[in-house]
Structures are given as structure tokens and as C-alpha cells.
Amino acid sequence: MIGHPPEAYGQMADDIQRVLISQEEIEARVLQLGQEISSDYAGLNPLFIGVLKGVVPFLADLLRAITIPVEVDYLDIARFRPGRQARPGAVRLAKDLAAPIEGRHVLFVEDVIDTGMTLNYLLRNIRTR
Image (cartoon, rainbow, N blue to C red; front, side, top):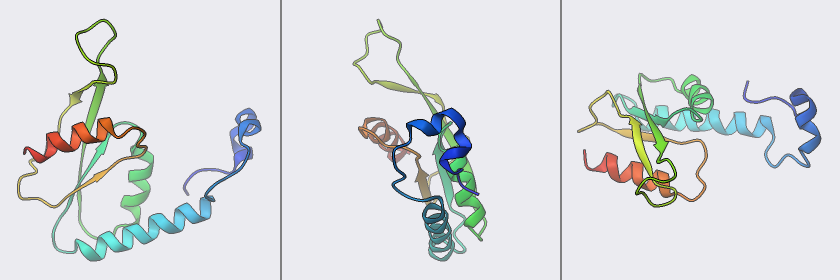
């Protein structure tokens, strides 16, 4: 099961004005994605890369919907602390991949993309490998 109805969040439910996408719609879409990935990558043993920690719940649901063998690895990022010689929003790798990716079919899975700067940094980093 993905998520809970707003009332399951107790006091936080008071702040929810409307639900944009229902739990059922999300579950159906995740199942559809799992079926498409299973079909498109059958026999290819793809590597899924997620960014810790936010991606874990979504990736777990997605993996349950996939019917082929896959491998999973994670990256973790850390923001530079204020006062350091880094531009605002700059990040660094706090945990790198353990699995080699050269010659692999890699699917990058992310939970939330706001400005896209972090995703851009990570994808540039991964492409160099």
C-alpha cells in the first residue's frame, strides 16, 4: 500500500486542502511503471540508482511491481555547510555507488525534483563513468 488517507496523518490532516492524485491512482501508475520496466528490460539485469533517503519508500513500491531481476544501489548527497567556499545549493557526494555501472542499463530513480540542480549534478557525475 502506498501512503495513507489524510485522516491517517492525525493533526497534519488539517493542513491538507485537497488531494491532487489519489492513493489508488498512484498505486495504479506504479504498477504500470513496474510492468513497463519488466517488459522493456527483460534479460538485461538493470541497475536502479536511488538518492537516499527520500526515494526509499517509492523505490520499494516500484521494485515490488517489477517482475525481472534487478540490482539496486544508492547515492547520498550532503549540502555544503554555510561559511564554506561553495555556492548556495551546492552539494557533494556523501555516499557513492558500490556497483560498477559501465556497460549497464541504469535507471535513475528520484522522489522529488525541485530546481533540478542536484539531479543535474548527479547525472553529470554518473555519465562520466
